[in-house]
Image 1 (cartoon, helix red, strand yellow):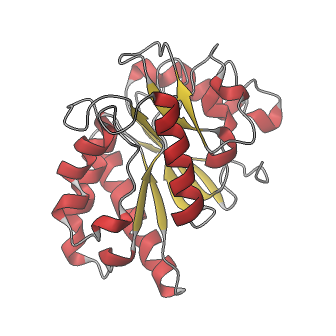
Image 2 (cartoon, one colour; image 1 turned 30 degrees about the vertical axis):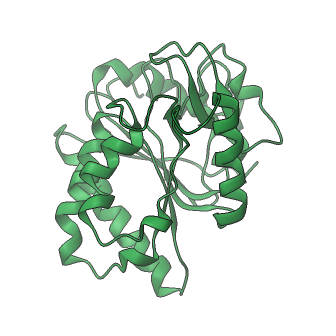
Length: 250
C-alpha cells in the first residue's frame, strides 16, 4: 500500500474541458519523466471520457517533444471478449491514441482477449506475467474512470475483487456491467503509481465522487463500498472532474 496522499480536486465548469486538461497534464508528465532519462509506463482506462482524453492527446501530440517510441502503455482492466470486439478498451483506445502516434507496438501491452486465452483466469495470469517481466514496477501515471457505483477498473462494490492480495491482475466473473467476464488490476498493483488521476464527468457520478473524495480509505472509508476510495498515488492523487460530477462535494 502506498503512502496516503491527500487528493487534489480540480473542477472544470465546462464538461468538455477536463479531457483537454488531462491530455496536457499527461504530455507534461511524460516529458518530465523522459527528461529524467526514464521510460514512463502509463496506465490507461476505458470509457467515454477516456476516449475523449486519448483523442486530445493525439491531437496535441505534434506540438510536444515526447518520444513516443519510449513510452509504455498498459490497461487497468479489460473485457474478456474477442480481440475484434468493440467492447475492448484496448481497441477503443488504439483507434483514438496509440495507433495515431509513432508508438512502438512492443510497448503497448494488452490483456489477452478471449480468442487468445482459454479462460479469463488464463488471461489474468498472462497479463500478470507480462507486467512482471516488462513492467517498471510502478506507473508514472495511472488513469482511472469511476462508475456511478464507485467502481474502478473492474473492482466492483460487493464483489471479491477488492479483497485480492498478492496478485497483479485477477479474473472477474459476473460483472454488474456487461460483459460479465473481465480482467482487472488489483488494488496492490494500482497503488504502485506515482500519479493517480480520476477523470470523471457527469451528474450520475456525483455521489460516488463525493464519497471517495470526502472519506478516502486512509480516513476510514470502506473501499469495498466505494472502490474508488482505495487507490492513491505515491506522489499525487488528482480528481479532474466537471461541475456536474462535483455537484455533491461539500
